[in-house]
Length: 265
Image (cartoon, rainbow, N blue to C red; front, side):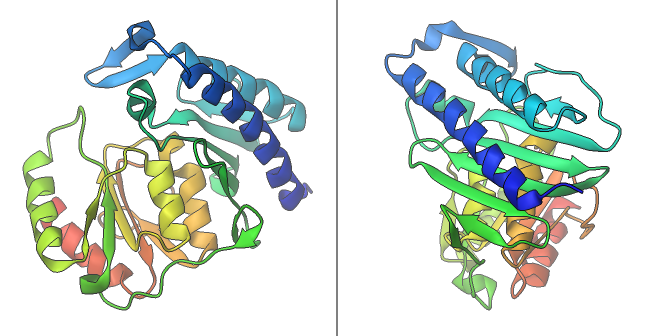
């Protein structure tokens, strides 16, 4: 049986090394050295370099584990354990010299996320969690907010950038939330959005069109911080990011009902 707390310590070390590489390359980065994977979907040698470093370090940490990585650096399949890695969440922010952006690393045992780290590069903030171990920010325990109604909440979201099928519904939902909450924030990194929900900076978060590597670590951190996550139908199992909400327990049901009413119609 692996020591999940110690695993998180080692994940954080790997994230710090990759973060140092990202910060170094951000100085004088030439946006022309960017590749395009799809509509408004970019990747640079920095994403790939960070991922290569992480795969190398994590392979040594748990040799039997497989990988799910955004940039496809490793296709290794693990029977029991699997690393889920986003080497640079918020690539568009990075390309424009705009913070925040982060590294997101999760460890899965079969279909369950059991450890996760979201490392915010610019602020050197490390959000960590392991199964039944609570959630932590730079060694201090964190908890979701105590807001009791959606009217008192600050909402985080991400705008669609290449999947516009639900855009009309999304904008109607956004309009409603603008009128009935403390406000909306869009910072460009789902991993950081979830980390901020976990520590109470944001009260709720919703987005569609995400990927497993965007949300795997963050959703564990939210859960271990006392919050809840689900898709737009309220399903809380085997989430991959196609539909995603996160909130504290007090407002989860109210928030889910609103998002579901707009986004499922």
